[in-house]
Length: 165
Image 1 (tube, one colour):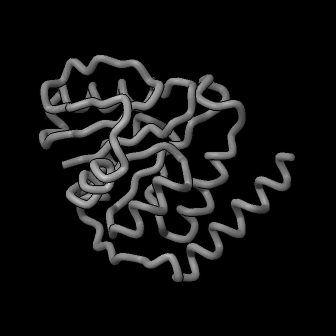
Image 2: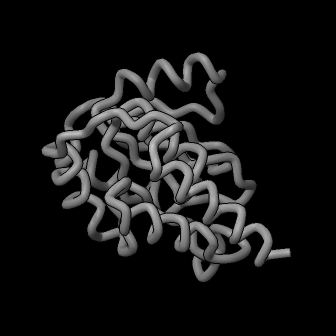
């Protein structure tokens, strides 16, 4: 199962959901996809996608633990949770030029986390399928919140927050 998480930002993220729908309709993604869409209002045509606006935290974690791959926006919280559960993470940053966010801070997060080997980045949506194939072959180990990578990420996030103020 693939878990698609779009976060809670109020702007829609159609670029990612349309690509997932297309890959499912073409039969490239055959397994079940569970999607938490947040504010993105989208009706999937693919039959193997089960979509929710929001999931209760317990259900969200249960689905994430059962998933084979997590595909998410560039939000640090979702990425860090998936890493803690030992899941391969594909991160597609929301971008300002597509109206998906006010700025490109998710691009910075994804770049930093991919440089440390935490995520498979997708900067061009046409590369999503190859990222899924790569994620399915990855050997992942769970990382605890005490791991150095989390300290690095938390430090970077604080630096970005200070810079944005």
